[in-house]
Length: 269
Image 1 (spheres, helix red, strand yellow):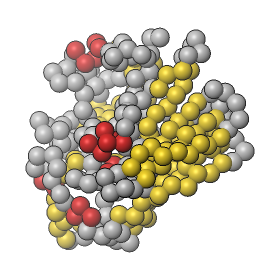
Image 2 (cartoon, helix red, strand yellow):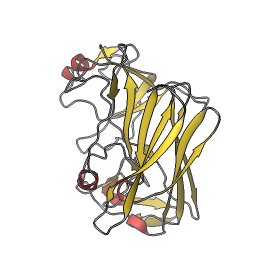
Image 3 (cartoon, rainbow, N blue to C red):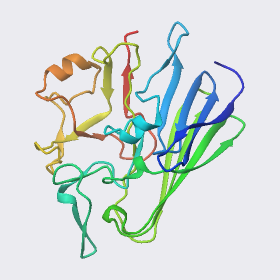
Image 4 (cartoon, rainbow, N blue to C red):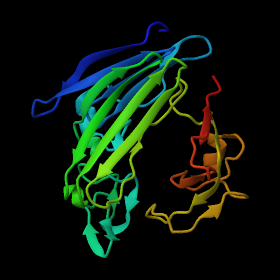
């Protein structure tokens, strides 16, 4: 797959109302990344293993209808707020705001029709050592209950050094919560699960959560707990130490605010 950097555009499918969803395939170095305008979804990342055989290392679907029906946010940009907001309510500058509740009594990943279900505008670009696509979406005031207009830009950038970057930018007309995230799932092997993968996290602290998966407000040390991934752990062993696996927030060691490694995931293959 190695060769000249390039971008290929195609139609991934059409929505029920007839809107064409564009797909952009980015080629650089020895990697291919696929992005589409529905949900600003990262459809796939094709990389070679140690034998040179290519695999898509993210989970996804083959059809647009599956993405439209998807409840797991495969590869999508979630927002305005990635995560849960208790009772769909927050207070900001003395005013109460009530959001859509789409996860029991709580608001999850931007609501019933969050950014993962929107059609974004796309603009491909290329430079001497990278190719990419910019995706734009304007969230109007009142959408899902949030205040102010929010103009968002996501940039997927594939570089000749075999790195994929996702950059986020948002500008609001009023104070509003914003927490954009990409919701990709990774499987670095051809196995049906990732239990033999190893994971290391550069995180000394984590946020405990209640039965509703909402953070309790505490920030605790991972030392002496099964949340300690400061050295590599086989995921099967780590998961077996817990009752229900992991669905917590980890606090990355980065007081400088500069870009640093957050995690290392490895496949035994």
